[in-house]
Image (cartoon, rainbow, N blue to C red; front, top):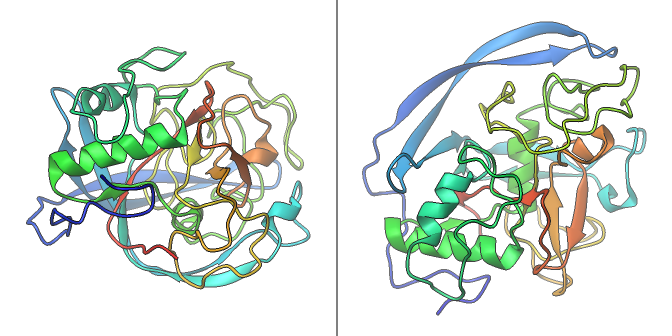
Length: 301
């Protein structure tokens, strides 16, 4: 049996197995300081689809490698000491799920034989097959990845924090990938307290169907808002001593807690910034906590 930071080495998880790749065209929005949309850019991404079960496809989007500045500058509104230690690092290419894992995807994988622990087939509070699965602990998210890996012969796992932020920023340096502010027209969060110079927005009081809003410039949906997303690392209170690549950072970390990224439907927009990071115990569950998966790249260190 694997532990939480090693792979199931009896299988070949490489992406050398031929995959049928597809292209997806999309639009992404840019906002000015007042939260007014000023432009839309068209782009496309490459992805493959993993069939998890009947009507339960898992689209995995290719993210090219590159370098980026992780963390927030001192001047960023709502910056936390947890984001201190802004640093540049390199990321190897990987694939990441186009959406947070949905309830129909969860149900399909939860029906597979256990690896390390039992999974409830329907854990979510806000029901809906196309809504993100929530009320999921870190341990349960890892179990999902282990079962999915055994089913497909490819290694699926939670993203490292570095991979997550790189994928979220999508070659941007502003607090949000749409600019210096964000509105509830572009993400599901508690908009009653505005960010920057925007007006107050909606509070939907629940999760929304994945893909309800425009994606980021990498073609990834719901990276900000909807549900918090677990990352693979152990928790570190700052970036002091962080590795210079996208590896899963465990050295010197707190074994009792794990990071989450992205904000959620019940948090204010400042928590939805690309740099925001919080942490909870790995057995913590909540109706605003879910996850997405990655395949390829990363190391543990």
